[in-house]
Image 1 (cartoon, rainbow, N blue to C red):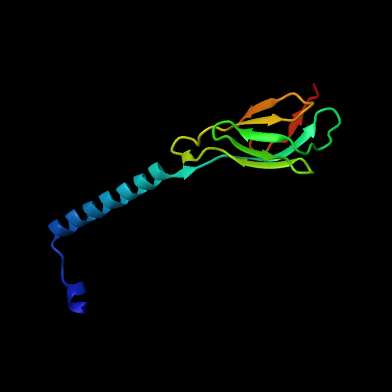
Image 2 (spheres, rainbow, N blue to C red):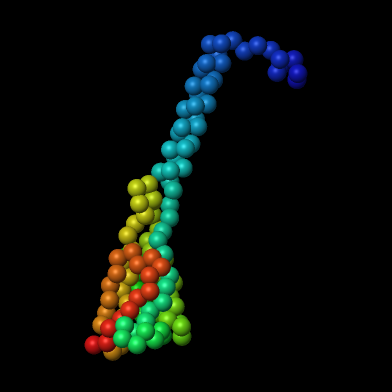
Length: 120
């Protein structure tokens, strides 16, 4: 085995091998970036805009996927947006917040923001 490793490789073959390895590495790297997938999330709390009291049972709906969750007793919610490629940017996510007695609010890419709903 040592004899094989110690043998000199002709320059012409070594040059072609290095080019082939570089092409493979570049192709692999491009493939990883193109196939990169991800999603946006919205994670926060919903409050009454006037009293700042957390609101439970607020419907939080992702319009692109129709995923629906309700806030818990502390006003907390967590939703995930559409899953897709992130080469330039992840897909947008629009979340609609609805509760009886309050005005519906729709927000594009809410992220980790707290949401304040106004009474009707």
